[in-house]
Length: 553
Image (tube, rainbow, N blue to C red; front, top):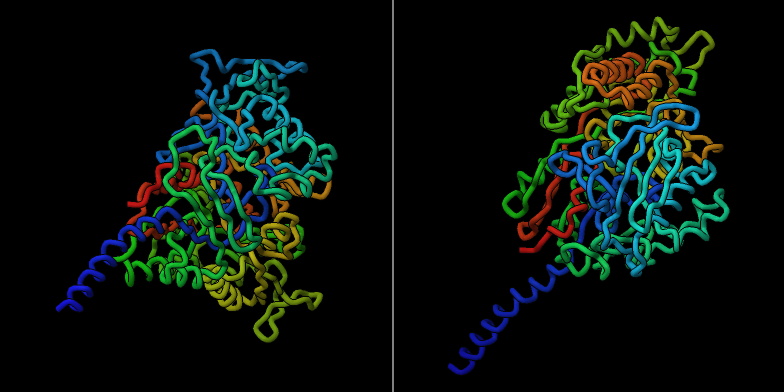
């Protein structure tokens, strides 16, 4: 009897300890993603994995929230014409511009206790205007004719264009001048010497709820609460963002408990998530969020084969995108006709479309001179085979499946498509950024509502060694009509003018096909039942920007 009583007591004690241990374990959150950032500088790298991490460690001046509304995060209040903080202004050359007043939150400080001030604003602006530094989105800095510090927290930007969205300053990512100035002394070396990439655990680099405390290159990033954070204190004492590039292995790590949550922004593919929900939906919360995520194939327009529009159109007609959507994604990822999602208010449907039509694809290739068919592969008059190469991120199961479907489809039209994939850190960090792919690069763009595609479609945004490989026009697309439409949609703000230029942008895109549109993605957020507060946005600004609302129940 005594022995039995002791056993009951031990069992009871263990039962009492289990909830406490589980609660303690929930002080740490392990987020699984499929790609490792190509760098940590907010103005030198552009990558969804980095965006997700920066959502926890930084606060942009302005962003779009989960309701697609523009809000302040680092700024004190959105400027407006009504309160006089947006004013018409003229450049020294007499061109129409804008003068806009902004204010940094009074309580904003870097993680080392240094206040966020206009010194940081001026430094960021100055280094952004030096092409050799290789800062992303150089057009933004070219427009900032002058930045005037009014005091430590207030500043005025004189914009040399009278744009329609002057209150938004989303792309202006402030960095700490007290840490970055030395690295920027030689702008041409700034990309390799900046503190974000040479000393990423320096607390002074961050001003969000968390700061990076450990980096295992290619594997994980560890974050801990930032003691100087001014907002609501975050729940988790540690967050580990773990990269597992093979998406099947990422799912397995979730089931084994090595990962708590798979981030929708950069996690497993939709087909995997649908299967996962059927098998494990009782144990996890699976949320499917459609949004402004556009899967596509960038075409290298310097390739002589792809300079022929008939070939580009033939390639798209030859791909059965409807079958890809239906069979891999149960129709939840609709076929795209352009880069503008139907959820976006500027979307138009009246554009050239490319239904699956192998016969038409063959006719176009015949017209382009690829008429000699040997061994099922087309050749031109010079005897050259119609051979192209496609690349994407290795280990991404769904992209590899899509590549195989495309390869088979194009083979039916007489095109020899070769697959050569690379790890994401190489593919995005060098191959795509420096335009080193031979023909086709498959990946996704993520954007904000009504996002003007200057960085990836304007001819001034083609990356070159001379401009420090800035810009994201990786195809090399140069169209005077597209350039004009992008320039005009930014400054002609009436409803009729906006509609006109957005129509031109989308129709030109569909007519000229610098890119092969595939489908719009729906991201799958796979969360444990105990995790709450995660709110997917459906656009480029990640759910982690509100990490302080995440809790363990």
